[in-house]
Image 1 (spheres, rainbow, N blue to C red):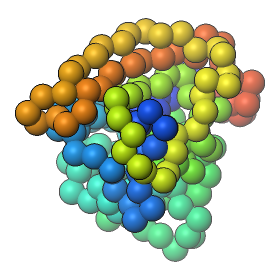
Image 2: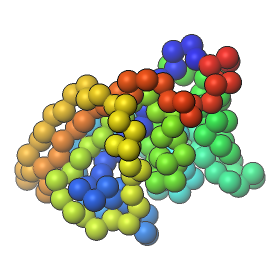
Image 3: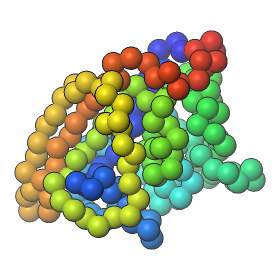
Length: 181
């Protein structure tokens, strides 16, 4: 695939919650926001339409690809895509060395078979969110690259651990035609 890496980045609590039914995060953790911004800076991002709209104003040096079923949707910044396959091909055609999947839940689920790496912030709490990150542990082909714990402090109400995982073998579900692009 010309070396384009596909990474998923997410913050999740002990119950895998990543968001609320109303949208948004069930926590306020500046350390995780800084971590997210630092990792995604200047990169191509894949987001669902609702997540994209919740993040309006964030896309200063990113190239967002917005996954939506709406054929008439034109994002103010970035481009629309209608399948993960289409978004991956678009990022590749744009010359992206990496595509970072940023949610929401249905986008994470659809993109998991494509992922080469996971960048997860495990929050040491049960925050009561309703949207969940998919069960990547069912696929035992991941190795831990790093794990860094941060305790709660005056600005961050919960302890968190930044974990980076790499898929050991390419997913058999990753579309083979993308390797030919």
